[in-house]
Image (cartoon, rainbow, N blue to C red; front, side):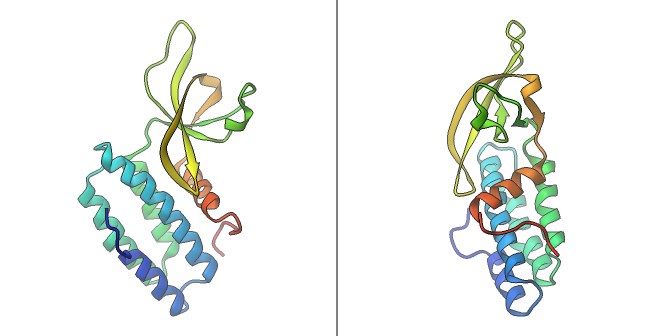
Length: 171
């Protein structure tokens, strides 16, 4: 992926300088962009997403939306892209009593239901500064402890982790 300042970064700066977005909105999109990049780049490596399709969205479509001040459209396109291309087997952990610190975390199914135990093998993602890392913890959990992950929740949680002082929601 690109290592230079992206077109999206430039568009965010320009939108802020021209008054098309507030500092809070700029920071929210920047945080969301970090989470979006982490998921999309992971999906590219796994072969779930075409790298050219991702680059076109990130370096052309999203900057155009930001440049005209359509930040909600930018956010929506990020979410739509991820819903269409990744995370079909992503779950959010809930109601764990033996490991309550993992409640609210996300993971990925990494196998099939084991009939004898009634548990699913899950790789729980570890987040560092709002970015998904390669470090994962492998668990086996019952279905009642899992729910399909909602991409918007995932990205907003990761963006909040990257910028804990920022509040969410556009005005």
